[in-house]
Image (cartoon, rainbow, N blue to C red; front, side):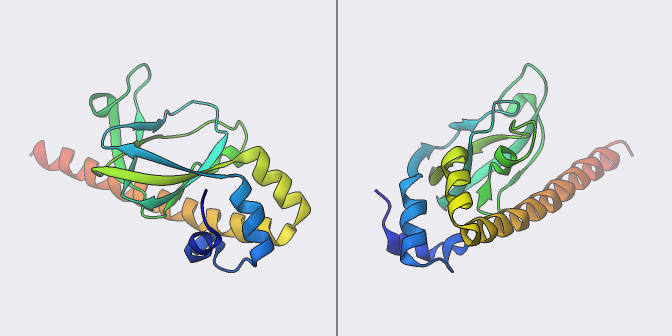
Length: 160
C-alpha cells in the first residue's frame, strides 16, 4: 500500500490534508513496468489516470493496426509526470499509447470511477487534482508540438 507520506510529496497531492490523502490512497495502486512494456494503447477505453513515481514513460501516436516503435509517429517523454487524463474527457479513450521508456518505471494507477466519487464528496480534492491534470495536458501538448516540429524539420532537411 502507498503511504500518506509518499503521496503528500507528490506535486499533485501536496496541498491535501491527511483525510484527503487517505481517500486518494484507497484508489491508488503502484504498478511496475520494465523497458518496452506497454502501459496502455491508443484507442483503448480510458479508465485510469497515471502518475510517474520513478523512471520515464514515452507517449506516442501509433498508426492504425500497428503498435510499437515501427508503427509510431513522433513521440515524447512525459515530463508532466501525469498522463491518462483522457479518462475524464469523452469519448473516454486513450489518445496516445504509453510505454515504459527507462530500464524500469513505477507509476501510480488511479481508477477514474473511484476518483470521481472522491471528487463528489470533496470538491477541493477534485479541484486540486483537475488543476494539476490541466497543467499536465498543456505540457504534453507543447511537448508533442515540439516533437512534430522536430520530426518535420528533419524530414525537410533530408530532402535538400
